Length: 142
Image 1 (cartoon, rainbow, N blue to C red):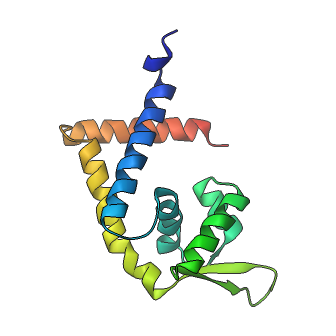
Image 2: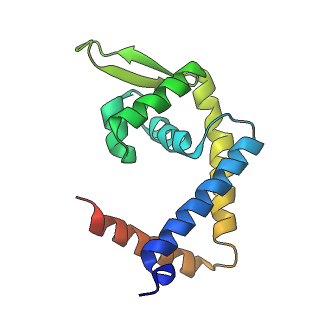
């Protein structure tokens, strides 16, 4: 089997290249966040005030790695932890003003990286790729 031609290898290479390009664009924009932190923030931009466990589940990362990212983002003043009114053992994650202000520029960086990735694709090809990737993801989700 030629492993370089497998879908697994190709999607892995694509993920790595896309992540590196987005990291580069985020650094150029001087946002002070990484691709993984961007992924975490996209969830908070959609649903501010969720728990760390909910966040870990949504981005498919273990709680320990999410805790490390949250610690970094909290130290940067991008998010804050607030104890749940009903259960003080639970911390809810909230964006700060600085965290909300990052969204537009960070989203523009992601959009640019995706445009570069799909350069030369027509709309139908993009739609087909998106549909096939969603189906593959759905096949592997438990």
